[in-house]
Amino acid sequence: MTSFLRSILLLLWITLPLPIFPQTGDLERVSPESQGLSSSDVKAYFDAMLTCPTGEPHGLMILRHGKVVGEFFPKPFEPNQPQLLYSAAKTFTGLAVVLAIEENRLKLTDRVATFFPEQLPDSISDHLASMTVRDLLTMTSGIQPDPLMRTTGAEWIRRYLSKPVSQPGEVFHYDSMCSYLLSAIVQRVTGEKLLDYLRRKIFDPLHITTVDWEESPEGINTGGWGLRMHVESMAKFGQLLLNKGEWEGKRLVSPEWVEEMTSSLQETGMPDTYGYHTWRCDYPNAYRADGALGQYIIVAPDEEMVVAITQANTSNGVAERQLVWKLLRQAKKEPLPESSAYTALLQTQNSSSLPVASAKKRRTRCQSLLLDKQAALGTNGLEWRTLRLESATKESLQLTVTTTEGKEYTISAGLGEWHTNQTDAHPPYSIKAVGRFQGIHPPFSVASCFGEDNDQLTIKVRYTNWGFGADLHFRITEGQLSLKVKETGKREAYNVPIELE
Image 1 (cartoon, one colour):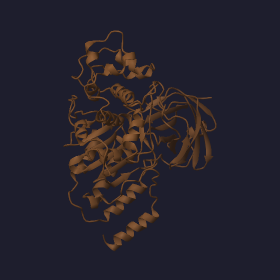
Image 2: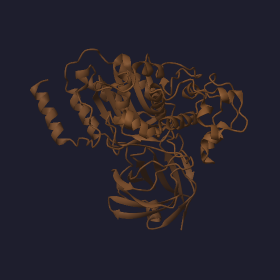
Image 3: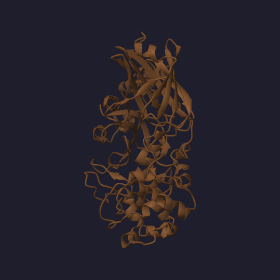
Image 4: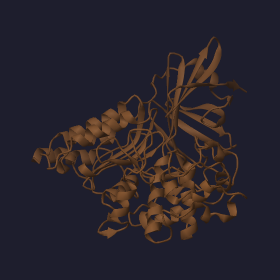
């Protein structure tokens, strides 16, 4: 590296607002070139994710040879904010089952019914009696998925086992209740909740300290959803799998079990196949943890790379994964010459932002009509019952909301810039399970900005340590105030009835 380039990088280090890592920051940060990647290619990947029409990135981290060669958290998201993983949690549950098998606490061939004798129906079919732990791991339980089951009652295990069962082990049906039963089995055989077991066996050795996991009304970690952690913690977990179960010279899980759980074991009717709660990718020898809206831990052993992603995409994730495959194909085995492109990459990493609302300062008729009035809202994904808009300064608005749970909190929105707020009120959540949020710990961060253009008031809201977001568009049409909401992760906006009180 030339002395000129060193001077430039030192100046950037001093002057740019670098991220702060309270619990994260354990992994070594290096230039992409030192690990056989081009800073230009890494920057191009980040830029493409930021402008991808089907997604909104929240946090990205790229590891090569166990070192961070790129990390990207566009404002208002930050690296020290844990994110909800949705179904990417399933791979953690799969590993917990493997660990319990290694400790001889259970076997793949164990019958599921034997773990829950008090919750079985009066009459047990042959198919229910033959269902095994392996069938749950490969999503071939023989039970048709029923996502509404979690929303209408508290006895999830009893209700699941009472459903009709076809021949287990044959047909793939993606079902989060398979993961829930595995979590319950781990709790039965270890005497610890799934999170506590993984904390002792995996998270503590990896220095993953900020992590929580939802619990069911039965006091069991949900297993298939509800896990929340930092993006760097996701990357560490991926690196553990890439290392075949070894971390800092210590064996945490056997390489044979890592190989088995991440292998192609079950046809799914799609190009991607399934292992033990792990997806095999259409990219050669790569596999992933995969959650709704594009939460990924992608492991590519041939390239010795891990890519951890949190985002809100509106598609099946193919477009975003294709960008990862393009980056992987550009990896070289030998280090590359250091380049001034690293300077541009650092600047991108430290100064990027999600698009803000148009920042024209004139007050629209919408804002004038809304100010200092209570507005009652119809059904909406924000789970807000009422809102009240007040003018804090010329450069900010205050939005006071009452949730459908009856909690009230205030959000400060900056004119053309993100303001971040804290609240103990639960954020919006697409999963409506009974007892949701049990085990999830506040406070929650809410970032917001606003802008006015063509008689439309736009307020953008992002729950940045959760993942949900929405754009609110207020407009007066034919003398009537209207509200249209576009949630992140959904393709279409929808109208919300609004009435000023």
